[in-house]
Image: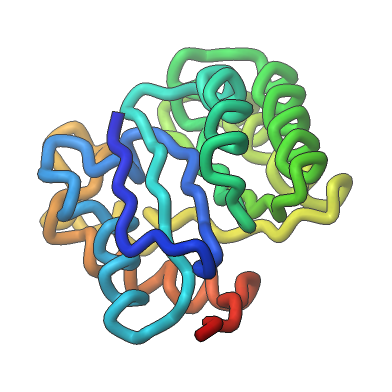
Amino acid sequence: MLLSVCSLSGHAATLLILGDSLSAGYMMAAEQSWPALLNQQWQSEKFNVTIINSSISGSTTQDGLARLPALLTRYKPDWVLIELGANDGIRGFPPAIPYKTLQKSIQLIQENGGKPLLMQIRIPRNYGAAYIAKLEAIYPQLAEETKTPLLPFFLEPIVTQPALMMNDGIHPTAEAQPLIRNMMAPLLRQHIEPKEKTQ
């Protein structure tokens, strides 16, 4: 499990990232992952939000939901970015499964006083057009039904550049992580605000 927590303080707002290998820094040092790079950037900018990266390679939406209650209790995050569903698709789960699981995760976050953020997930194009369409359609549907912001899939501008992807064609390289950070920073800042520091 990759869990990076930097500069936690009683007055910092917290953003929890609940993801899979795409956010866990697959096959690289934890500090090279885009969440760690973004946390470093925000700390250097005195942007008073701490990123807690609780992404685990191989996680499905069900894995994320199973871990979520303990994470909410421990960190009491102000926001939770859900970046899950790719492994559901790769394993061929019926779209109804990640739909229901993501719906429960969003509700749980809301019930615990946090604000969920949902990332659109894309899966490789070789899984069949009909299945891909049904799986990917659950994200805008859930976002609308639960009034949750939907963020674009951060690999879309990366996956078309072979030099930034590992040989499996699925995971971004270490060189891609700063680019993902640069994409995610303004997207996230549209939806989160740091808490005012107290003396």
